[in-house]
Image (cartoon, rainbow, N blue to C red; front, side, top):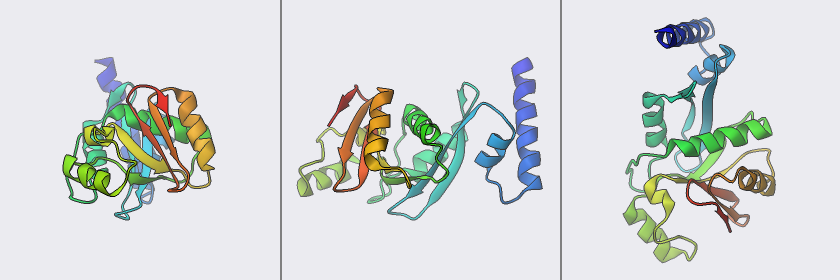
Length: 182
């Protein structure tokens, strides 16, 4: 009962802030309301889309936000949408917090369909046959104004999954698999 009242109060504050300042995104409004929310801001390098969303409030994920992120991180080659592991967003949130990021993560690759993964594997030797991208457990990113090696080191320090470093292609791969680096 008390939790429902707290959630209602949060939603009311968020809506009031969003209405008072129409240029604020929902994520910005939730942050301004002082809630213990987790948000992620993303810019897709292939589709040009932007997303800034609160994906968790308190200890709970927000289902509609997760669906929006799933769609945002769809396979940009064939449009297939996979379910993305929310633990990946927690890693992104922690990295953004660590760097005090004011700009969104640039996403190079999120979900990949098995067909896309196979095609990329035929073209490049650096694509795993059983890539965690196909399970929605991996993302390739960079963070503007953050040195790529610093982003890699911060991701490694979290010990939350795998971290791959691709300086020639200008991205860091993070995933929710076992802890490993390459």
